[in-house]
Image 1 (cartoon, one colour):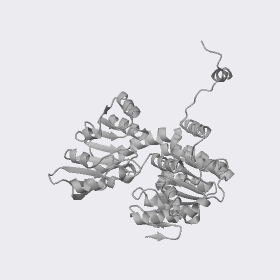
Image 2: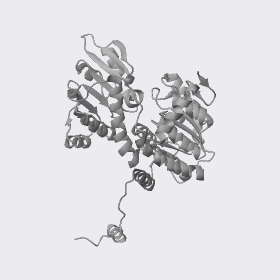
Image 3: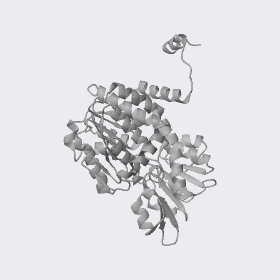
Length: 423
């Protein structure tokens, strides 16, 4: 059953009970966000604040939205990727929590942008982005909304890159907190979350054995680091491609072979792009791949793969398994594309585990509180999440894990402040 209202457009509201169970299961692994929610419910720091959130509509995201609502926010949620929406979660948020949800799994491009526009339809004071699509609309086709916006948050590398480009050009109209740059976000979500969930998506889509395979990781940022480590842990032989000499050197010192993509293309059995740029794998690379090569993308946008070049090179296409399409070249060689080139960890699997999203979404909730409280002092620029908030999130997670750490003594604190004491 389809449900459509001015503030809600979901696939089937009868899926809500199943979605509620899924959210409950995720929240069991999110104690930090639970602690934030408990305080938010008590203090109501977001009372009456209209929030437009463009995020992956998953059970973990639902836990964040419920936390914002506990703090008093009026949230409209739309998907940040057409293939990442979990319809049962969308239904649960709409039916059981009264959230305006605009998301359908597999929605087409026109619907996707209509949902973005509808999320902006209640003149939000806070834009919560995953890829900066809301921010882009506010600065283009919905420019009048910029006057209502107090601030924003962004949790992806790709989105932060786009927002910094706006700031450099002097067009960014409100302060944005780069949640992705928080240590408790990128060092854990990007590395451990992307590493595990990308492997999960590949295995679900292909059921291939990775042990002994040549696994090519395109990009050695935090996501690439995590993916390379997990692939190596599965027994794969990992190759890394990079354009940054520092990251390439790090990958080499981490024990991986580093090659240009033009050379790696003929060697790989599995390719995954996590570079945050367009055309990472293009026509010449597809043409050089061996028969049976598997190609996936774990970057935010599907532009990391030149899908038009792949279609020109291999015009015969068929769906073999869910999330797995075969492209056959005239000479008979086959390339297998996963999840239509979109985020494989979300389109072919369920995204990051809740335990790591606990950190990221605690950062998101606290960044929302911070930017709203500090907006008058913050310039229209991209800002870091304060270190104190970052550390508080880490302390809460350690406490939940039962981990204790040392505390500096007064003498040690003084030593760190002084310059006269040395050898």
